[in-house]
Length: 353
Ligand SMILES: [Zn+2]
Image (cartoon, rainbow, N blue to C red; front, side, top):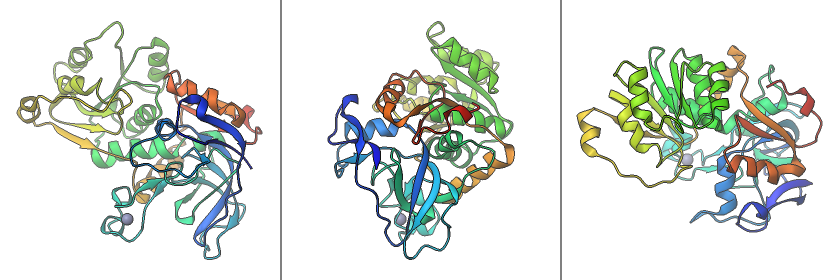
């Protein structure tokens, strides 16, 4: 089958498109014929390689997928051939104390499709049957494929870790990235006000159309914390959603209100930062980490998207053959929303976003 894969860790040119072996489902797994698969920054980390991450080459990248069930493992009776599904990319053992509590993303053996096992940038992928959810019926395949990782991550950050309230004002850095845009849409869905930042006026205008109440261009207004305080009458925001890391860490302490919450899920600008501990305790600030989400959070997110008819922000839909160009676009931060691979080249013209 055709797939986008790597034979070794490396730069962008390590990504190849060609033939790899078809997946065979284990007893508890299901083979999906992938219609659409979305890119995530995780794909870049996996391609480059990380300490402790051992891949079996050729390794197919990709965590997000929407597709059709085409084969069942011998013990699977929870889904049927022909069902249209989205894949929850979180992999957990199911038996540790955290899994038994329903906190699968805290599992001792937690993994992600496309990192811990072959991914979704392929004509077919095998995943555990428990990872499948019906695809929301109002979404095109590319919109549905845009959901899993980014919207699950943003959902847990806002709703579970951040304890978002409708009365909150949220600051989201670097609008345009998948988690940032998912955060904007989901926070608006919950009734909160959202302030967004970017270096691109075009991205800020598009974010305003998606419901951002205020925008800050940090290239001509570099003191983002002061700008946030001005926008909030000197008060500061209740919640910060941060997938940027080192570059935005110091801004957060100047932009948060007393008693506010800062939730981190990524480090696209670097992972090391210093903290002024006095700013932390004097202002009663809570710093929270968050990765992916549980099965229940995935279910809640898909249900909220379905009942509100929310349309995920899709930047572009490109053919699997152009996977390398697509990954380059994401690596340069040029996108506004999810970049989606059209695996069969059949539905690009049906995308509405
Ligand atoms: Zn577990």
